[in-house]
Image (cartoon, rainbow over all chains, first blue to last red; front, side, top):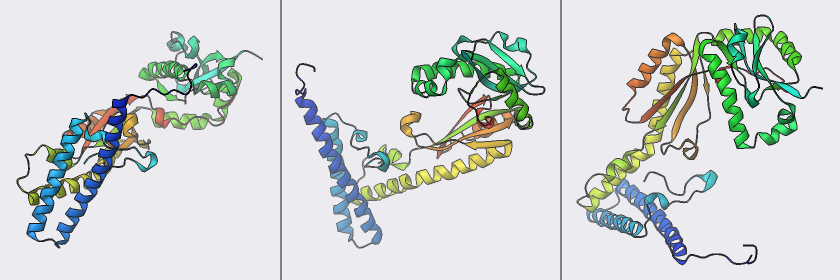
Length: 95
Length: 255
């Protein structure tokens, strides 16, 4: 540290994993928002049965894909969250 | 000017000086009693350099020193509190010398007597209530939904339960508080601890201290035991404690 003050140790895998974590966190946020929006539209009753089924299936597949991806990168759902300090966590802790 | 200050652990009544003789206080000092007729103070000498106002401010940020001092303080108060009536004072309550402590005792005799009367025959109990996680966790264990519509229905149910779980837990905690309050002579609210501090993953919804008559401790345990397996909350009971939360420190507690 003393003789090479400008050098920072970079672990490529670590960077890749952290980047993936951030990307997945944002995707997860969008997924949850879409899910809530879909549920709201179903509650309002402005979707046909077929639309409802399609929407549900897409969201289900998306959730499965998310689970697989998270696992593949050795992450847990709890990792896909950001602590926003006084604002609390980005995503609800209990999804 | 002497090089020691008088550290006060607790205000008490009817303590035989021999009962404290074996106790070791903060910094290893011998514990003594200062009698002011009716009420007495449990004290020991501490190093002036360590406890003088400016030095003390720095010391209180030294966690190791703080832990050692808190342990010694609690040891004295707890040992004595087992079979005596004591009103423990806050950590690091120090006076210039013994005479100053006697003067404070004289001046506030009525107040101290009232506090001791209030504590007599009663002990402090702590009740912490945590909310249990909502429906999302339970829904995850179910088998895969058969259709898209079914998936949406389940998610709606899970989200709704998660949203109401905390409210339900707060309501249930209020009921616990009401039930325990009927047994208690007094109660005092403590700050809710954040999940990161409490080391619990569930959110804390109640953190309160109750001053409960000793003969009602069994009732208290029963109330808490009856709440085991409550679907919304988990209740944690600790005690009996020396009544730290119910003893007011005398005013102007500075040397």
